[in-house]
Image 1 (cartoon, rainbow over the protein chains, first blue to last red):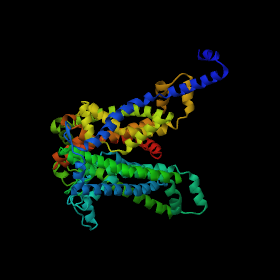
Image 2 (image 1 turned 120 degrees about the horizontal axis):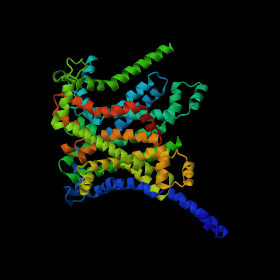
Image 3 (image 1 turned 45 degrees about the vertical axis):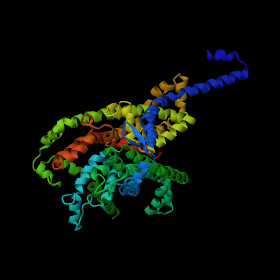
Image 4 (image 1 turned 60 degrees about the vertical axis):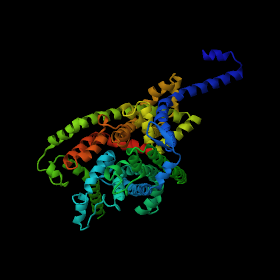
Length: 309
Length: 275
């Protein structure tokens, strides 16, 4: 029927109409309505609260009514000594966890793509902790790290090292939690590296072999530069994860001893629990600003290097 | 000589990996089946008695069967959220990949921001309360969908890009467009990545602690992770029961892992390096 109607038209018009019809059909094949459910949920449950956070951060707020107080919350947040420790801790935690995940993930990735006979088994073993809930991991390691009865210190005693109260000592609490985070998360980093390394074409390795290069040469000049996309993913994922980290810290130390292992996320929760919703939201806005200020340039910079590599 | 060296290197790798990654799990299991006096030691001694059933029943009956209720709630949340997540994310990822333009650029930007921005939890409570969904399972489900959408769309989108457009065109010639094109032709082809999204997000949602802690307080709405967290103080001295609880709530992700191990890893890597 469409062709019959088009047949009545003049020559150029017919072609135009046909082109138009094709484009219309092409467009209607991918309707915007497919976006709709995702867009509604994301907009209402995610974007609206995020936008409102910028307003509520400026108020004294009880969930039911709010009084505008300007930048007071931010002033309070930044003025307190504990909160400044929390900021520093958050950065330290994110740097330590993502750094270790990159290094260990790369090493494990190289090891588990080599011709190891137990490769399959080891891959499963390394990946396994990522499937256990953070709360369960936190509780288990709290037990392992107990000063007298904990297995870690008992094992250290066997080799003649005096262990300490890893989670109760202000100098080690944050780092102990960070190491447990690495234990739990390195499996994911390893999997990403395994995929990255396996996607490197075999010819490169053969070329190095022809030139007489050894294993170190192969690692330094082939594996390391060409697994850059994997490094990029691991850094972004674990750094942002580290900045937001809450559940492990909360189950293992609750920010203690004192406030020495508090991070922004645990402070946000404490303020929320105490009923300071405006203050808590101000913390969230600060976290948002920090994550964005770090993630966007990092993303940009790493993305550029990725193209170069 | 080289064979010997390789063998010893492999042995070292195996022992290290076992000690570092499996010892904590062995401890969990062993402690869970001991009686209270022996569990206090937290060591690898073989259990002198095996009160498995007693420990199991004690954990189940604790606080008026809160664990069973938590199990039901967690299962409902996980199944419903993952179902919605798969349908919504795959549809959106499909148009996003196939129909470039201003809208797609905006959608792309939103996906990226969803990955980066930490959810504003307290304003989310305020919003859910305004909608009458605070402390309800539907509210929790929608929140989980919203928080996991970006990641799912990323995986789906990378996969859709690998499906040739000619296939869409062939379907269009047969008169299949829009929703029919998607659900009849494309969605079945997305099976491998759908499996990955289902596995990864169900593990994440089932293991989620932070969001239920904020958005779903109260014993009648307990989820397994929040219940475990509360047991931590309750069973301060009864570590056998605490670890029995840990073992019980680790079983579902463990089963997924045992059956779908290869697929999780394969699908995850397919999406991750394209990140």
